Image (tube, rainbow, N blue to C red; front, side):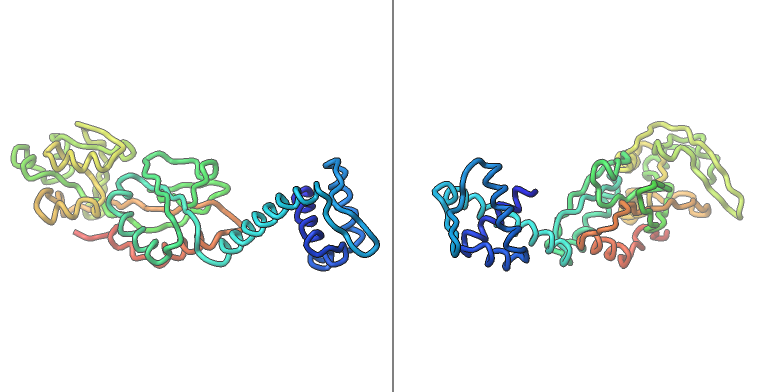
Length: 297
């Protein structure tokens, strides 16, 4: 870094023709300016300046070197301006991760609203059911289901997510009756591998069961499409199923039984110096209406 600073210093001396005037520009004593240029010449093994009692001028080597010094000065100035912009206005790239079902059924509208409000912010969305290492992979924000902890992480609850039990009408017509949770033992169940237990309650009496799995997957999208195709019964987020329920492609089952929701959390690194883009996203999340996640029957 000293070499970079000395190159900038040489450009100032060359343009002012004086150690004193160059020092005045950057707030440095004449003696220090002279010493720093002498050290630069010693490192290069070349004389860059001709010195007299009243004036300094560039040598031939100095003229060549000056062009590089000016480029360095311009790049440093541009970098400093970019960092100032990052602090003063929402601009830059945010790296966000979420489950694949959230990416498909919620994020398009959610992020469209954000980027419309902050057009100078670019979003890189990673849709994955894996829990990425937020710190190591430099993720700005992660939406995750369930409880997450970490020494260097901040965790904020975003919303409850309502779940409903669904199946295709054709599957129901061909199968045995399904009037209460224990009837699931006689059905083909499509189970998310992170939710092997299904809990139902009526009159404060919970029933906890591990349904017989005809298929398991970490993909809610796969389970939804399998259910629509008549593959069985699935316990899915209501906001994902509701469009298919509304047009009769799926049936909302066991309406008299309550199914506990799960929680969507927002996770982000515990940073002291937060960019304006990161702060803008946090504010957007804090004011966003997440009622789509808790849609009723």
